[in-house]
Image (cartoon, rainbow, N blue to C red):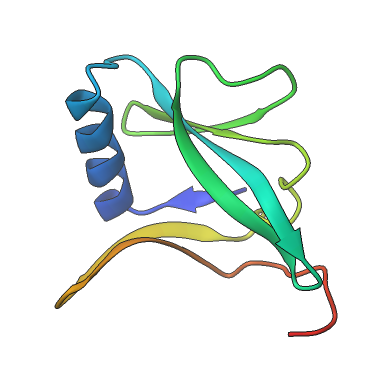
Length: 100
């Protein structure tokens, strides 16, 4: 199942707080893609969609679109701060395409 680092949980909770959406979680979904597999999107979600898988860590719920659950099965979401580079990254994806 998908793992979420402590740094990612902290940033997700910060975003949720800034959006005044206390009690909400984060939803991960496919947002297009190509021959190398889907692109992923993140959004604040009150309760996810029907059929979503749910991962919970430190009170944060992460809802995963079932169409991408398999590719995220052994992945980890992290938040990185490396100089000017900041953001969420997904490590350990299982790609389904053959061109990359």
